Image 1 (spheres, rainbow, N blue to C red):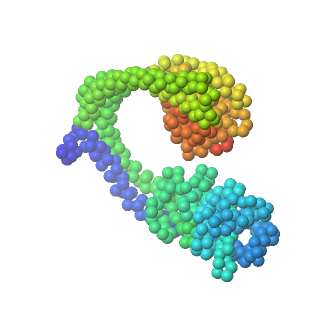
Image 2 (image 1 turned 135 degrees about the vertical axis):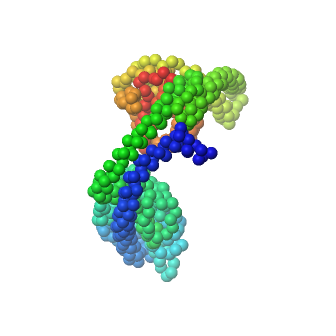
Image 3 (image 1 turned 90 degrees about the horizontal axis):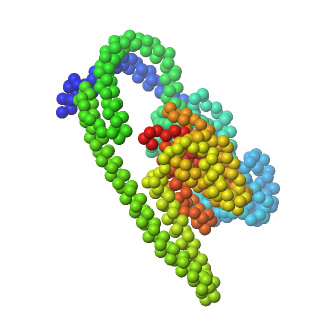
Length: 589
């Protein structure tokens, strides 16, 4: 059957096969083998350079660690550690740290409890070490250990720790550690500058990026995905896609002592750049061979193109939801596609009718369900109020607490039902899109929550905003939910909310990009997707009230307008929510 399709002169396979044979064969038969051998030779040369560079950097890092371990081993013999005189040891530590700026010495017992930390005066209460596994290894193995990247328990900085045991009479008394900032490693990389276009990456044993020469801010402190699969131990060179998704040649050198690794890689495009001059001569010689094939291929491709273009009108009819009639398009494959489009249009119209009916039934069900759920809630609340008014003197403190909890639960359930109804009606009860001043909607939303603004001492500033075709009620509620969120999750300072906007063009359409910025408690960006999902909360209900559906309503409303929403934030540094919506709606939106 496959051979019959290939040899059928009306099939796409036959014509494309002719096109490929005519265009590619005369070109690559002449140049393919030469390009291959030249590339292989260049690759071997680059492999050797990559391997030598990675090993040199890894040796430099190991040498630095060995020096630190030797210095710590000498300091571990201090008599002050025998007697636990950390005031005297503090004076020795200050002299020691002159050789290691921005570093700290610390002493911990077998439980990880810090007994001394040069960052604090002796005698100051100290927390346990964040790196308890490192302390445990020192006491179990009785030899120096190099940590992975971690955050200091006191400073909160990104640190590396080199730890040695303090041994007396064959017993390990303490863990003596030196915490180093990552710039110590950066200095090593700077002593060995890489060629232009090359990228260096240092990872700890857990593949956490300690330093990267390219775009370090985006990767340092984050775990790097397995770059080479699971190749095993030792140093090696392989092809892979780097963190930017660019095909590269890379070498990995791993330290047997610390488990750290150095990866040095370069884009494969650089190899081709060095072959450019030779390739120009090769291309010039093959162009003449290609011209005849391209002319013939163009003739063949014209027939295919016309046949495929004939499918565009029925495809547009299908997109508009109209019926598509089957027709002849010049090729067996395009005839089959045309027939499939006609069948799909019938199926689409049927499913559209079913979906509309289902939405109506769902809306009716939601209305009935909400009524049936709210009725017992009203009764519970009414009986609770009667109990409080008529029998308050018969209730002890526990009874009053139970009554308060019951009433709060009723209020939360009622709010949840209303939020669920609003969420379901975004698409089942939409209002038409009307050209509206977005700034007016934002100001009206701010006015709706004026009481909450005053209670929190907040301030909402709204810049000039464009007009757009929107569902005014939904967009006003979206602004209100974003403002309420900012007021709810504010820090110690009064909330400040700034609304700005700009217009941008994309794919032939104009969009309004709206930024809602606050100075609240912020959030970790790893929870970005979670905050827009219904009922997902980053904080307990006891700390911040709410149903966890407000941002889900905003997202669904924005998407109904053909827009998108995202956010940027850091814990303790506020958040900015970005809404992008088209200024004009397309007819089918």
